Length: 470
Image 1 (spheres, rainbow, N blue to C red):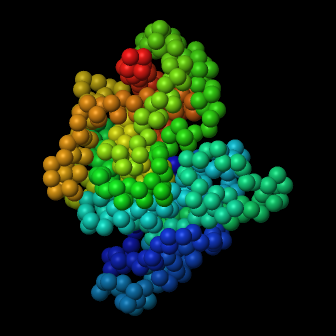
Image 2: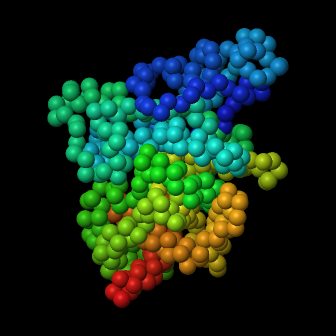
Image 3: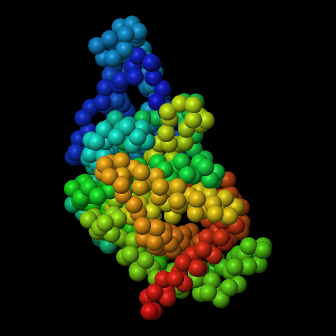
């Protein structure tokens, strides 16, 4: 998932940049070496452009900050201070997914990467206009402006192929030349508003409890935007995903679950006796944690996969880590709000799944002690209730017993993902190496955070194991 954006730099009189209508259907990808056709969707009269800083590459996308030089006349801006033919400089952010860059992945994993791109393009083109149709100014200020978004996955993934269809057989030819020809122009891109520290935003991880609360209040607005709107939820279900989330079981490589027990035994062996916190690994129920998570995986996933018309179903972000939020660096002296980015895993789900992921991804163990975790949960639920009530025009409440059930299941599910995807190869040395990696979840780089999370999930598992047996 992608985490780098930077704030739009522009002449004051060019604040209203022209933006072409966003096409609902994909178009053929342009030559990736010539960005002028792409940049022209945001700016008129492109003269030249250059890359700013390093190209950022992550597991499922890459992106670049682009400084564009473009001409402007009074007829092309809403301002009154620029002379005709003024040369302006504007910074934008281009996020790209080129299919040919992911041939090292298995088809299951490569397909997931490509579907991520499709989902995010559809989110900006089709769903955001519907979310903002109510003229809710709060949410409008918390989603970056997208000037242009498109994808072309023809010959790889059918337009009506479900996001969660991890069983789709590979369409890739065995012949390397034919494969390269098929993938050459396939992929997608998004041209986005840019956000930067110099303009009052920053990213960080871990973050303080207060910063985390601000993130949770922001995502509560996203969740509220679709709450109870069955027509909108049906479209999100059909066009994005019926099971939102980067770590949803339907989305993952089956080997992650198949190797669960072995992965846990390896992880436990690597960390046992490391420090006082790792004594939790000696507990009898924790010794069997891998098998317990494996046994409960299907049940938990099913319980966390609501139908689009479920009472508590809504639009979820799906990858709500701290680095997918730009926080305002001010002290509240202006009207900046947190801005959420990277909607490649958006879809239908329980909003509190975003909360479960965020809290263990972004908060140090000590910040969750002495009621800290409960404070964050209550802060989110209060913000959600206020936002839904505002939109409905009447008081609405999220029963706390229902909310806690969803939260506990979400934590169990997130451990299943981390254990299957990352902990098979985790060691104290790998934690140490990644300790400053802000994009890495804290429970995969901080031993104390990992052990506290294990202890919590051990208790939650016991609750649902008893319920199933009874």
